[in-house]
Length: 300
Image (cartoon, rainbow, N blue to C red; front, side, top):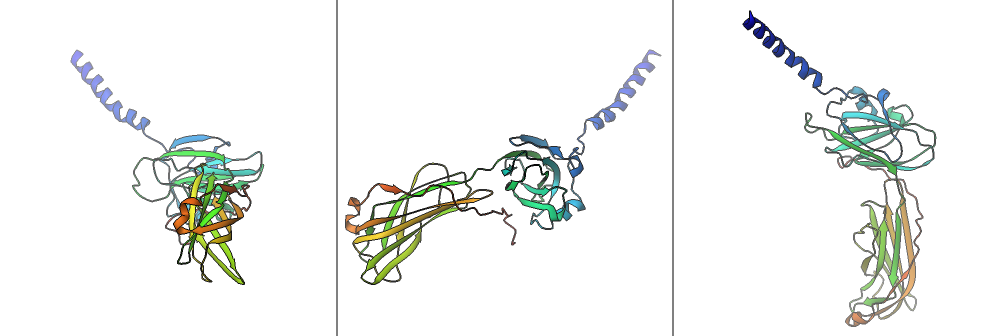
């Protein structure tokens, strides 16, 4: 009888194993649909396991006006700003390729106000509710883990500065080179610098344009130089007028700065003697240009 009791107890324990394992398994998250959207506040940094989140025909219908390749493992958040401002929503640190769609008020294809991979930005209206759908945007490894990392922050306005040095160099074959410094912060990869050089030779206006190459937006001062060739004549030793412009774009807007100054061109053989200290130009951000982040595969 004692043996029978031990046998029955063992069978009962084995029978409980599947029940315990089933209770511990992951479940579909409560914010799998927009009706369960979790509340966000400006400055929030949230993480979520979205592995068991689902996608459906409703998600696909919402991306009619967004070129996202896929909307897998979608989860929802919402925020209502107390003040109008420019904000950025960032999921770029998630451990999978993540995208975002943002809707003003009730999520529909027509209420979409921003979409893109990694980071999106938009101006928001005080008292208006915005719904955010974060999702896996590549369609790869459908069974893989999905650890979402989402941040809601203020989107800063890019700040740019450019200066032109007082000296340049003229080459005997007609080209010229001018140089200076620039700085750029609060911007992404979309930035550039252009220069223009005008020299008068009697009635002839010798002028040309050039680009200063890539712009690094890390907040520190960098040097730039541009080689300019004119289609209307050849530059020579003497005075000219140089103009330099820089632009940089963040996730919501762009800023520009420019400076114009009289420079002296020396012959190339004396280029070691003409380097001078640059004169500061306009530094305030001015032009505002709305930006639309797009997926690399989008042709729109």
